[in-house]
Image 1 (cartoon, rainbow, N blue to C red):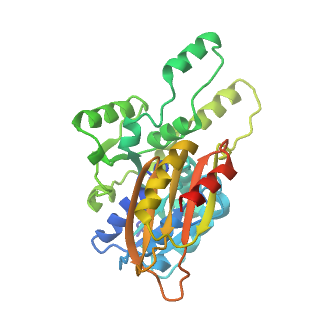
Image 2: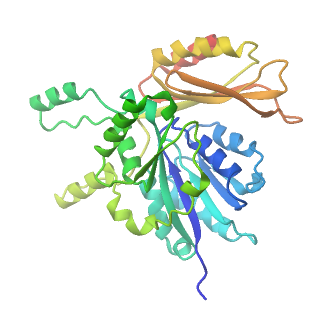
Image 3: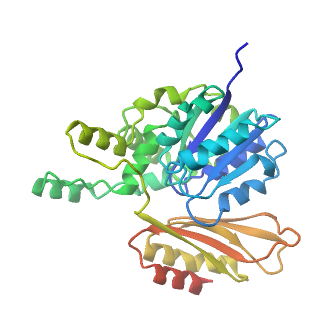
Length: 357
């Protein structure tokens, strides 16, 4: 009798799209399925893993949550992801489902292709790739260049390629999807949602199903059980980099085949207690706008409060909520990770965030 493969769901999406919130809601409503969770984050502070460990879902204990912190999962497939999967599959009690949250800067294609490795393909299949989209950010043009300016430059020099690293990455994440979750639709009106759907459809040749979500609320039965077998269809989901590599190879040009994140930088920052979190949020907004911070997230120590405050910023939109009590013996402090483009003034950003506290 053939052994039934364990389904695995890959959840991808750009920084701040709401992947962790969707996973948290999924874990709390998984219908008793035992879920193993693999998390990969960009930056030195494991905020997402810490948030999910604190959600209290009985079907996904701390032992079932594995964090990969040695770099982007799409760049460390052989060194990190494959050995992690092998160890997971060697456990006496196997999970019913595996969920993998990629870094917001990861290409999902190399990860999906890894499920064709001999040690994995006979035991696990990709149930589906779910790409989470920040609908409000798309509507605001966050992932688009100034196309009039680009067209003018191309008229002057047809050899120029002006796709931004953010725009290419966004399209690559969409291209790999079996299901696209349009998150944060509560921030848009009906016409805005239609425009977002049209924007996404116009960017990719494949036409995966799109579902709308508010605050990451998507029924688990929608997310799990897609049965896509995505690893068998990987040739139809090629990234910009892969297509460029193929074109150069066909033309006889040597090309180093790798994907890195030199366009992005991050730093972790430890601060003291913050007595006025609302004021801190108000002071952070102009800092984020002035320095083009892509993402800020972490935990805030509020004196007199028994619970830690989670802070999540995408652009100038900042959300906060208390998630769990500080643990006995846990050091109370404010810890943040800040992500931006590589050409920012690192010292100025650090100084500005510290001043806001």
